[in-house]
Image (cartoon, rainbow, N blue to C red; front, side, top):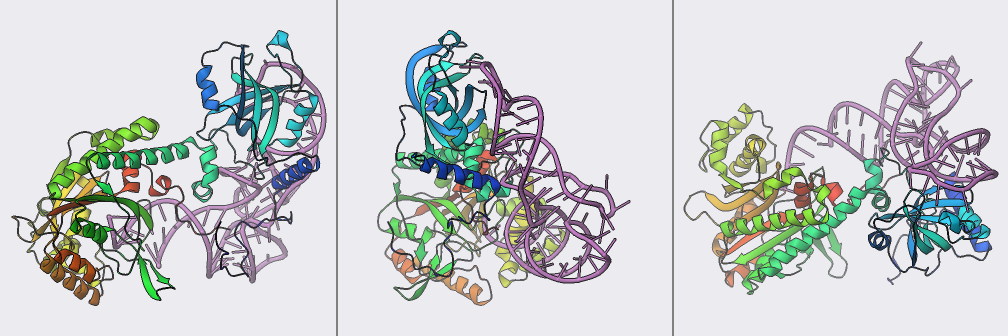
Length: 525
RNA sequence: GCGCUGCUAGCUCAAUUGGCAGAGCAACUGACUCUUAAUCAGUGGGUUCUGGGUUCGAGUCCCAGGCGGCGCACCA
């Protein structure tokens, strides 16, 4: 499959078998012994295939509404993971669960009792084999007729059964009220997905949302492209990058913090409506709304502007609400309805002035903003980059205005210093045509009327370089090839970036680590 | 990065003032042909995250480290 890994031979391979027994728990040793016993008896705990003619869900659908002790002539082979077992001597019950969480009971009778609704027995040996070999968590195949039990529970009455896969580790407590700890869920998502319905629903909701985004964009003539994740310069956003190294090229590379500069090259090349859904990497702090790698939708439309892109963004978010409502309605926050109602918009300087009780304009000196920050009790970082007009205005706005927002809100017209890729406002001096979309207190998306004047763009990059020299480690690098592209002629363009994880968060109220299948965690014990 | 807080059986948790390390589920043995978290009888299972220290005695107190959670800072 893959080339021989060039790993350090002194480090044991991850997941190396721990056969010594001493490191195994009692329960794991019991299961390993069962596996060995099955092999010794000529059985196969991991057969290449087992009988399977239908799914548990299909059986449930086909036989809904049967009365108690019904016997159908529908003979099926079903498979699933054993999640409950109820021994009853010569009549045995187990509950199987398949991938989507659907469960179905199976019954094993030692001997047939047609008079009691049990037309088939599996025999003493097969029943004893189940009891000695099958543990909670094992995958099994059961072949037999669809029946209902004396209490009306839809079941498959086994004529035969086969082990499909032996689980060597026990599942966690499956009973109600005994949830896995958050750490255990994240570290062993494969178990979380078996045990917790919400974990399964989140995966489905996410797939549905991403599908809805692609569908809406595709329907409007947008082309999906993939641009580099490994970049020689990091650009398109203000953030610290992860860096890595190419052996073949013998040079430093950066994991992208944004695809923006490449998608704009696409627009220059005539791909007038493009988008990309992919991962960005930012070497910043992690919390319930930030992850070092996160999924982003970026889209650009030639001859669009930040107003047209705001409308497109709203349509995409609303399509996502409907997608979750269809696939995982239980996950959808009641508050998500507000996303379907009209959205509001405020101007950054106007709403900040109102909240601060003092007029703040693009010409307000940084010293005044620092004084205002102190007055409202907002901490200001010591880096040079944190004490300029632009960042002060943005931070003051987040501090004073964000808590007062209700419902989805576009905040418009940002300071120019912090937005080096955005064009100046068409009529308001000192601000740029940029909005951020806030939903439920966090930034969900950002949209621009893109800067397309290569001379102004070069000036902005030079200013960023100056900030970097002054100690702002998030300032952008000067990208000559990107400027060359812009000098080739870029049409007026609107652009948007929207966090896909955050979109899920906005719809479900979950933290970012719950919307991602395998969030980064430190290696545990 | 800073502050607070947690880590005990496979899972979820308890353990009084520093004094025999426990429960439920899971596991093991046995009984049971209609159970729904089956029930009944019995049994086993612990490096109390790691390493030091104090003490007659440490899950508990102190120090250092590891890994979480929460808050703050930064970022989206």
